Image 1 (cartoon, helix red, strand yellow):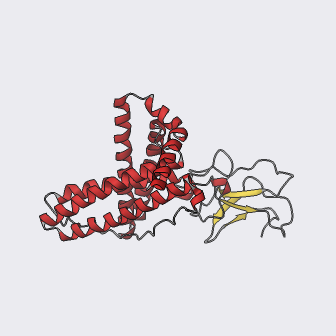
Image 2 (cartoon, rainbow, N blue to C red):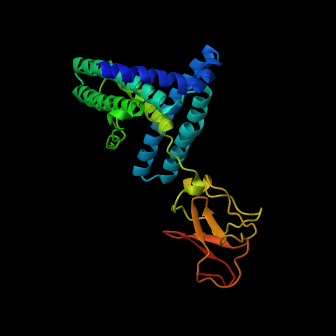
Image 3 (cartoon, rainbow, N blue to C red):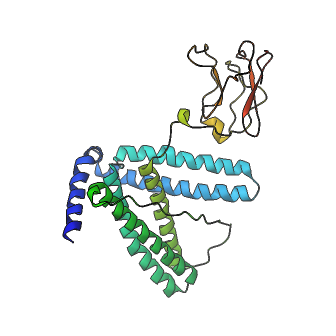
Length: 303
């Protein structure tokens, strides 16, 4: 117990020192504005979650265009709206501060899910009661992991390490009516909103995104028949891999390394070693294949 109090005290001190910037940014906001930002973040997180579910349903029903619309809109809600609002709020702090937010949230979930499971049992919705109980066990595991991670960061001399993350088991969703009523329906809605916000904030805390230029080879959807570097190029494709990337560039060849012709910022192919002749001109067009994009032009330089 004494050892744990030492760890907890060190954690609090580290939180005060490392999260001062975020706290200062939040303190400069009017209380009404802070409350509005928090409400907006919850709304954006739930929008991301529901649009993602809608996209999966649309894809399974044979409507990829609708799935793409929902999927891209979901990305805007999370990566643009939610992230911008969290920045104004000073929501993200140090690793220790973020872990403490996670511990607080998981602790509250234990209380909420216990109550919801009891109410679902009273209302006669056994399926919801079982689900609430199962989710509560998962949340307890999250709490244990976050607590262990705090100890590993604060007092590494004990040999504590950050535990491995939990295993994700995706659940398929099919259209259908609600299977419960009474208090259980609003409890399910509150649980979904809480889970959506947890996903959004943990994604923000993890922040494992890598700049596009440093990513390895990726597939992308085939481009239009002609897409040159000039200003008269047709509209950019609307597929996710294309729309986030800049147009191909055709600047002067770099003497330090071979020219790289880009399908997108995520896909690059250097000049082949066996290539002969001058490099293709800017009017060269890109055509997609199953694994990569090959460069076609009227010049002798071909694969």
